[in-house]
Image (cartoon, rainbow, N blue to C red; front, side, top):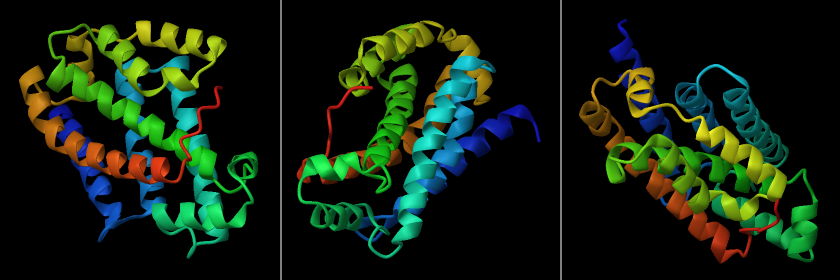
Length: 217
């Protein structure tokens, strides 16, 4: 298998896993956790082998594993995103008690969603909407859009430092193993649009249930 084929297969796998998250009008929580497993390699391709990529992967793995454990405790009630929220909203007297219980997976699910959204928006800016901008500019724009409001001063400083280390477009395109920039755009566009719609539907459920908690880390 040559490197180009490897990159295309990775994106195809992410695309397939994204489609598997749907069951009719519902979104399967455990399938979203599976999707996270496919996304981990993207961090390495963006930031290379080092502490930054390892830290980001660890954060996403931590969130998705806690969500998975929460679902496994009550698989029927937490099978879908919609039922996970409806069940937990009935279980607790108020939202403060809901988000204080770290075992129900709700807060971790929120961070998992944000992590997926960050990668998707970043790649979209890099190859589709802001393709003439430097990657560190795309990274900072994405951070401001997706994560900035939920990070305190210290976390924000660390993340911004990491994003400044974003590679050049040439290096990222080479790491993604998708051919030229234009070929990378062609391979990524469909996959990103599928995940963006998925994230949009999840975000609607979160907002409808007043669960887009703004607590900072």
